[in-house]
Image (tube, rainbow, N blue to C red; front, side):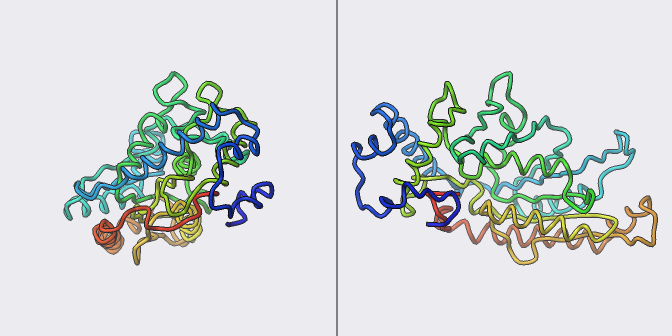
Length: 316
């Protein structure tokens, strides 16, 4: 078991071949109704894992644009990174994928409230801070989670904002934590019941089986093919890509060879001349190659079950 989320109280029983309901009720200090709720959530997770994958459907690709720039807004000019993203998506469309570009600036995405740092099970899917289909829900809960779930290929495009990914992209990635392991709340009427959620966490650590997909935390990005496009005036592009790469790799995505590109102008030129450089023919060709490699990887990996990729189901 990894050290992440390690439970010293659970360590003595993790290796037991069979843990009885009576033992769990005593160890977790819960009644049978609560234990059954934990077990029902686990059963739902196993069923969800069994339904995952789109092997018999057309490959679906989405492009996530983190740029704030828009010629109809105060920038009075379209985004360079989004231009290259659209070229990438055109190539994916040409290769036979069903494609959609998602400009994050056009969606209402509320900030993550960091429930996950209390316990994995304090964070839920769908996000219980902004419940789907309610007045408190936002576009992340109501729209974007489902688009990510349906996608086989996800291409991320971001400008460089102060040597890092854009604010929109950071907001989106933070809220994607609900896709990365989160389950149904143990108490739908009181989803932020900290004491109960910690007990649910311990239940998962005790009962998750790495040989039974969905029996623990469900990493919903697992097996999705990914590419990254970054544009900037200076070398912050490499820092933005590195940040995205580490986050997405831990989300469980697949990066094919040459799956990222950076289009960068020189500090010798003023920023208003950047567009001529970073949207030039060489960079368009690079964006098309990301599409070609992503399509090939997605086609190859379709023969694999998503949960053939291994991770520790009992912690995150």
